[in-house]
Structures are given as C-alpha cells and as structure tokens.
Length: 124
Image 1 (cartoon, one colour):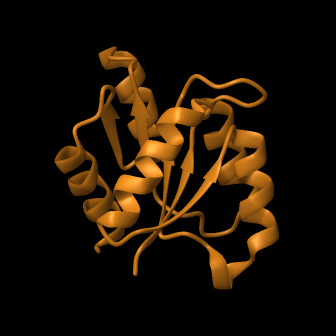
Image 2 (cartoon, rainbow, N blue to C red):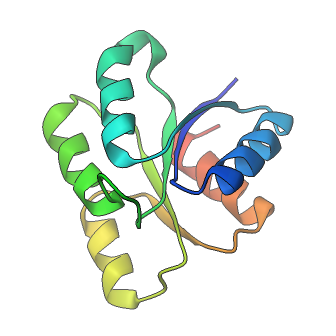
C-alpha cells in the first residue's frame, strides 16, 4: 500500500482528502503545517518514511517553501513532493519544480488529477 504525508492547515480539507485517498488504497498520515511534518518525518526513520508528501504552500508556522528548504537540508533521501495549492502563477510553479517538487496540483483539486500526480511521483 503506497503511503503519503498530507500537509495542509485546512483541517476539513485534510480530513476529506485523507478519507478519499484511503478509499483509493493509500496509507495517509497528516500534519497541520510544515514544521509538524518535518518533525514527524525526522522522528519516523527510514522504515516509516512516506512514499510521497502532498504539500500545501500557504500555512502558518512553516509554509510550503520553507518546508521544501528544510526537507532538503534535514532529511537524507527525502520523499518526493507534490504541491497542492490555489496559487496559479507560472513563476511560482517554475520555482517549485526547480526546488525539487515533482508536480503542482491546483486547488480546488480533482481526485483523478491528484491520484495521477501521486502515482507519477511514487511509481505506485
């Protein structure tokens, strides 16, 4: 079963996406912001590392861009990241892809598009 860490400050969206992804066969862990996600990933060790991270950009405590910097600095062999965001600016998409993001999926999200992006990122 492929696994994903869902990082989004919108609790309702997090719960809805978690439910939908679990129905589709994904093991889903969640975090309300980038700092909580980094802490969970650092504590988890290699045996529980998710196959991918699904990341919102605009969050309190630590936003998605800061998360990407910490992920690259703090974790050896970090999981692939798919960004889920309402921001639709070509320059931001370019910067995210340059930072190592595998795909950017636009909110409001369509489940088939999200699943395709996660499968492409993980090979699942």
